[in-house]
Image (cartoon, rainbow, N blue to C red; front, side, top):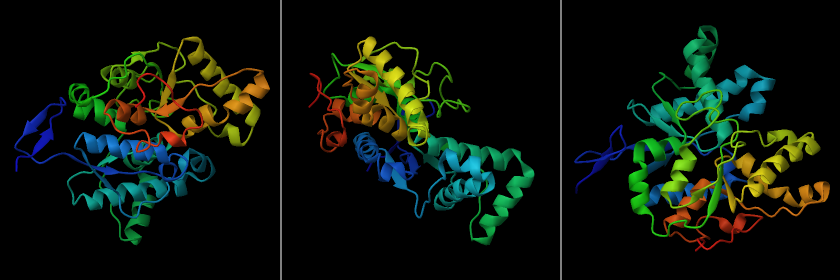
Length: 308
């Protein structure tokens, strides 16, 4: 049977083994962000990309734990890096981390081990005492990076069966996965999601708030401030004619969508703007059913001509 792999330019090369990725779901994609996992797995399956979930992964601690105990938080993240490396049998694991917080925390832990010798010694010794090792070969990747730079827009466009024609999409990147580490996109004006949505046939909404913070965990601490930040984002997207806001972060999706009723009461408005994961929109374009992609989990239904 002929096999294939992706070259660095995104082209598919025949005659070699397919590229394999290790999947780190984090806690959100197994709970509030289930629609993200459901749609992401379906989309990668449709593109014939092999995803292997890391065995025995643990919570990354999220960004909040790093502010409480940086060493323990780094140890939590480093354990996942070590597990992926060991399960790759020394091939250098490519780890896909879809959640923005997970992606950032794994990168922070990796950077600390590489650049802070004293901290690295503590973390590596802790892992050694638990039968783990880490060499630094693992590479943390965001799914947008893999889709655009490994698989390629050309192949994604070719896989599209029901283009998102007539759908105006405001791509919302949030503030975490392009800052402070802009590993694959521009930190203040990222383009990958816009390019991806355009390849699927959608109309791209040009707006300046694509990386502005949604409020993050403020909705759970100082709710009034968190909701105001999200409201500003949604109103700008609405003002510019967006049919839907596309996001790549479970917390952003939660903040922007689930509090719209509360925002309407507070700001005497009538917001009703769907907020979907970019992978759900990809799945629609691929002709995958809404139920399979987790659309029934959205609080604000997506109703457009392109919906299937």
